[in-house]
Length: 394
Image 1 (tube, helix red, strand yellow):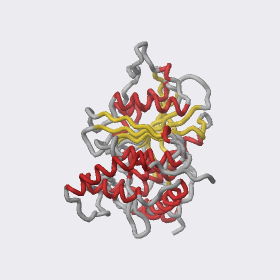
Image 2: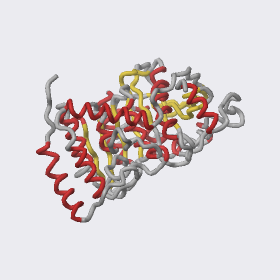
Image 3: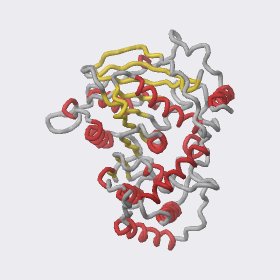
Image 4: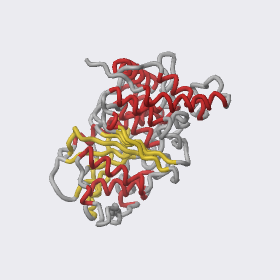
């Protein structure tokens, strides 16, 4: 295998300047197991990681250790057995350019992933698939910007699955504060990939994933751990100094253990050399992305000779959301790399037409009085933990 040198001449000067400023500000010994560092500490840590590899082979060896560490510390080594999904799909509704259906399936026997499937209204496929996890909002899958991006992607020619974060929306079998929520969330995302690939109209080789905030964490964790993701767009979450601060992101030591040491920038970089777009803003922990996180990711991609496959959109005047300009960048990137049709959603002036999205409420709930959750559903966190252990042969 040919060795590719990491382009230190590009990355190191910027990191060195910022690191000097951080040290001058008095950065102390790093509290590695904390979910939040100071910006100076995050920069110091990332600069230290940069010194551990210089070639593609060295990065890939580091990457194998990081992946093993994440799976081990997330209690997903071994992975659970893949039980039949037994999908429930109902409530089909036809909208302008897309169809929406209500979906539940079992990621573990008796543990349900709940969500909505958005399909193109025309054509027979095979269509690319896109997973859309959401952030920490109780009804995140029903937020206007979640529904809008899913509907527009479907109108562009993708089959899209938006699913509830564990403990949010209709995923109420386990509390989000549960100590196993990170384990379950990663596994739910892997099973969501299984679900998309099980649909006969989906091209299983063309799967994208995009989410914001905590959904951004889910996006880059899934991209790092499951090779079936082909295109990744994590939004307002990739940070060198902030790991999420929630049980579902840093409640288990997936970043630091006695056998591995990493951060979210490196986890997102494990997606190299596949196409990835990182979207950031000026009002949260991604405000330094153009000069800290993105250059590091570029150095990883450059080691593969694929520097142009990682891109960044930084919106310094915007806030922590998945607003119109963030969605526009994602639409173009997904269209480019999944073969979606921009002409289906562009107006004459080149702006995206999102006006044909019907914002739903009760009509897209999976379980209700008429259609209750199946009687065999697991009752609570301890029951789910027992099912997880059984699926792992423990």
